[in-house]
Length: 597
Image 1 (cartoon, rainbow, N blue to C red):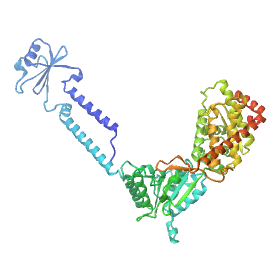
Image 2: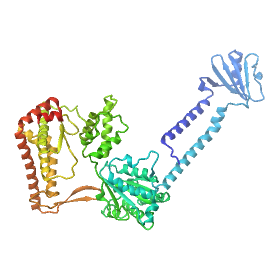
Image 3: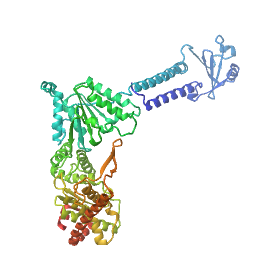
Image 4: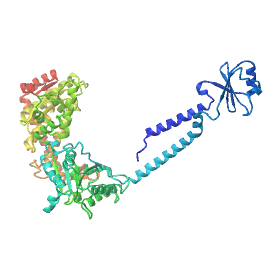
């Protein structure tokens, strides 16, 4: 049943008001047309006739209307069997009009007789529609809102760049849906559940759409949060309805996005025994591997928080196949950029390989955003094509935020910021051979007053202790440069200090890189699975160990600071030259930096 919108209600109400106003006006004896009609009697009309003031007399049944020369109308009534001649009014002296009483006007009849019935009928119909809609809504409260995928503009694996291992895992699922007899003949069973795990933006939902497109079978998609309502049992009812729909359309695929919304570990002690989320999770567990399961229904789910999922979801028979989607490497990033740039007018000189090299650590969603921002920059400059420079600016915007040129610093602040960024650049260039300096700027972006932008030359998956200490030295080099030149410290290094301290603490407590503490993980992170976020750290060590941890963290940070101080002390001339150039131009590109350092 189609729901009546507020706009439709307002329109009906407006029409009713218009008809009511028209009814009132039409019953005001012609006042709608500007005529002045007065109630009178035959004696007065006879006097006006004798005085020669009447121009026309209209007889409509028993109603007599006399039109006067001054524009007024006098109206009265007579008996049906009498004539105006009986009152001395002769038809020969004035214009005389007799209307047929059987051919009355339609509008008075409509407004006085038919319209009230129409209004009453419309009001009753409106109430019935509202009541029926409420009943339908109440009856469908426990129904699933899963959407059947539209396969007209389907996405296939060819439209998903990278993720080769993940696609190979899902090819088996697609092949089983296409040729189930081949697997059954040899006694093989396909997994009932496939869990896609990966950080936000890596392509979990896109891969699920590709499975739907490749399989050519009904594909139901729903977000896990759509199951949960404030009333206990509604989520479980929706799960049952979803699986019933799937069984009627088997073989088919069900895709549940953001599974952690309902799949968090049970037994947190919050919400009571009738917690709606737990009831919904229990129903999913039963439907996937209970007494009455359908092996032709395959469940795909996506999450970026596998650590909070209930163990019962991950056991064999449910989500026993877990596909991990990682961030793309350089080759995959180039392929992703090529797909998103397929329908965009890229200039022939654009080297996507070079662009991909400057996007280390970006996900597929980030790369799509980069290509879109590049197109926006090109359109803003009234260009016909997208240049490589546009894409590089887009990377900078996505990574660091938009430029804040309106934030004007004083000359002193600009000088401090320039020495700070030049310190980062020189120490980074000396210590980090695996990174390439792209740009230094003292133009504010995001929350930063200035920035030094360096990108890794290649993808890395392991870090050494020396690399961590070098990272700390680079982070503290801006603060060291300020202290060396101005003999003063500012708040500009607050974020650098925070990041350096975090690296040092992880080296001691997580990575076992402290000789004093040893190869031990110290401190256990605790999470409230009901809320799904880190709330604190369980202190499973003594006060003596805590003191040693603080000492080791301080020692590592001071070692990094000393390394930065030594490098800047030996390269003070370069620091001043680079700072002078930076103050003059505000932004330095890689070639200009290489000439100085």
